[in-house]
Amino acid sequence: MALNTIDAKMLSKMFLAGAKNLENKKEWINELNVFPVPDGDTGTNMTMTIMAAAREVSALPDDADMMAICKAISSGSLRGARGNSGVILSQLFRGFTKGIREEKEITVPVLATAFDRAVETAYKAVMKPKEGTILTVAKGGASKAKELAEEGVTDLEVFFDGVIKHAEYVLDQTPEMLPVLKQAGVVDSGGQGLVQVLKGAYDAFLGKELDLTIEKQETVSAKAASPDREATEQAEIKFGYCTEFIILLSRNFNIRTEMDFKAYLESIGDSIVVVADDDVVKVHVHTNDPGLAIQKALKYGALSNMKIDNMRLEHQEKLFKMSEKEQKEADGAETVRKETGFIAVSVGDGINGIFKGLGVDHIIEGGQTMNPSTEDMLNAIEAVHADTIYILPNNKNIILAANQAQSLVKDKNIIVIPTKTVPQGITAVINYVPDLSPEENAQSMQDEIHNVKTGQVTYAVRDTMIDDKEIKQGDYMGIGDKGILAVGAEMEEVTLKMTEEMVDEDTELISIYYGAEVEEASAEQLKEDISKKYPKCDIELQYGGQPIYYYIVSVE
Image (cartoon, rainbow, N blue to C red; front, side, top):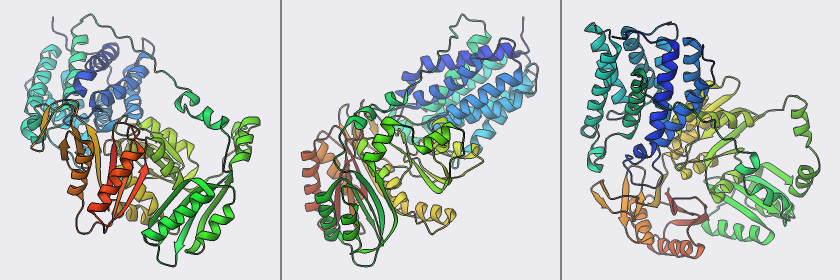
């Protein structure tokens, strides 16, 4: 007997089945990522996105109506969206649910309209839609849905079978649309994820026995999320004053001057960050005599944005009583806002420290190895008490989630600077000028990040062919902004070759951030080799502590 309608209860079951099927295929989808890096995460991002919605749907009562289910799917996936693929999936759900939420029963014509609305919404969310991706697969499915509806098909089994088969056909064509997929011998991973959602939903519609149990999300305590917090609180504070300021240069501050200044700061303190950019130098140091650092800095120019915190006093306050600010917040009092705040996505204690030293208020732990969700962004925005907040995603796969969070915030001016790498994020912060308007700063920062080239060294997890380079499992890869720049069996050789591909006649500065698995002596040797090769360039070496990527190198 043909089934021509879907009610709210069946919709709930189909959505949960789609989510579970995607979760079951997560690792397989991860392996479809074009770049054979050890952090391929399309399947993970899509799964975490849809499971955020599935938890909300499963929490609804059995008699929940269409509107309640649609709201749970839309809001859950929107806030839980991670990575580009997850954000696009959430936008597909958002558009789809808008097309069915007013209905008591869903028919083929309603579904065809909802599929079309889903695709329209998702395409609008992507600034430069690229064919051969999840968007193309969604559009193909919607096109088939419209065709079947216009042919007068009313049997939902026939309808779903036709839509899924056509979506699979379009998925198989994605390598012909994107040469990088064809060269790697894979179909688009995001498109495959969408097909698995549709297949799971169809299985539920057919009445197959499925486990639709949705596990609750594990909560992580603040201390567990920051394992070094307790150690920090218990550690003896050697230098008591966290000192930060900006030098507005009035004299030449070349690389030799900078090295001398850093050496002086090292003689009076630790946790030093000195970042020079044209007429401005940002300084961070922990010292027992801030006056010495200030006096030295005044030799180079006027000072602004000065901030000195007594870390020993703050340490005692944290241990023995609530701070005044915490007490006010506990009492429900309004927290005083400042004008400007910064949020950066970062991973690695060294890189996190650099961002903090440059004045970033809140670090969202994550990056290429774990894309933060829209919910993570919203929580960070709530934690930063500022009228205007700049978000630095520092990864191209996180920009959409940041933009989505921006659209959901109404009481603060959220500006997303589309930084695609950590060095771009550092450059953006350095180029912030307090005297400029938010709009002027945003434009200035975006202009400057385009002057930064970034290369990252990691290892291959499988054999493949990309950018006409044959890659073997275990090889080191130097990945640039637009593709793989170097491949080989020796890490330093690959790093040098990658750097060579980025350096040109206009290059003035090469910055090297070495990761958690690299010995300092090896990093120092690499710096020396690069210095010999490019004697006219300033070479900076800093501990990044990042996982997965042995070296991050920026060229400006």
